[in-house]
Amino acid sequence: MNAPNLPPLDDAVLPTGIRSRFVDGVNGLRMHLLEAGHEDPGRPCLLLLHGFPELAYSWRKVMPALAKAGYHVVAPDLRGYGRTAAGPVAYEADLAPFRMHNLLLDLLCLIAALDRERVATVIGHDFGSWVAGFCALARPDVFGSVVLMSAPFAGTPTLDAIAESLRPPAQDPIHAALSGLPRPREHYHRYFASPAAAPDMDGNPTRVAAFLRAYFHHKSADWPGNAPHPLAGWTPEALAEMPTYYIMDLGRSMPATVVPEAPEGGAGCAWLTDRELAVYATEYARSGFQGPLQGYRCRMDGSLARDLGRFAGGRLAVPALFIAGHSDWGPFQAPGALERMGARTCAHFYGCHFVDGAGHWVQQEQPHAVADLILDFLRRSIDDAGHRI
Image (cartoon, rainbow, N blue to C red; front, top):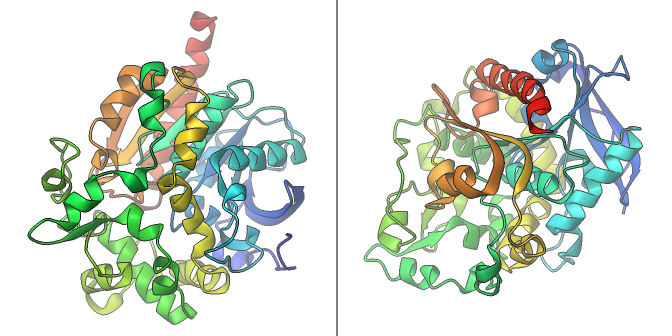
């Protein structure tokens, strides 16, 4: 299904040098993207993949610096998100289009539509980190390197653990254990995969803006309660050390969880003004939250595990870098995943970088530091390429 004939984003909400446009025929989608450095078709390409509840727009602050350094920078709204979405998605809709292997196909079709055969680097944040990692794992010939942000890509199961890895996460005993705590709790993945989540968050632009203002604030460095640390293990007691946007109070919606933590007066901030927030609110009010949440449903029903299982025992063969905010709980929410990424998942790992003054939305909170880290990684990985051949 193609998206309705929406116009591109207004130039007034975009930094100078970034354009908004659509590409037709992308695995059945009319895909919306933001683009910088597009004037010269000979530039190497960088592909930027957003997370939840973000959009291509979340990359607006790093794109100009990357383009200035000589790259063609492309940031699409992923399937189900923003102006790529044809409209609201029903909870009962087929999940197959949202499986990881089909998201990879979306991006391969986009690359072909841009008249490219490969991209220099695929860069993913939050859920986009998993998409980027899967792309680099499955097609290292197309994706020359990978930058993973905020969410570690734990990689494939080992061959001797593949059978156990295919158990749907929804069946994990951790859910009953969390609900059995003296203060009953629920993992946010389980909530996001439930029929209640999208209706809880959907609404008109004013309502959506109030929710997103609180959600973005709660997970940022601006919220003083974000002091992340490694967790002792995958136990209910350890997980309950995380803030309620990850380990929720059982029976409480996400808006009810985050709105009490909204900034005083609901005011904007330097890294996300009210005008910028309105872009997100308008898009989500139009298309709804269920399309984006289908990715969480694929995670919980075991689809993601099965897609990764096809590559059991494999490693990321391309150069890889991890970036997160110093105040971001994302790197620690799955105990052991961060360490596994460096020790096993990545064959050529360029390390973890934690950016001061940033929480989960690192590329929005501290865009200059993120752009510098990406460009340094690109220089180093290019210099090292001859030594690996």
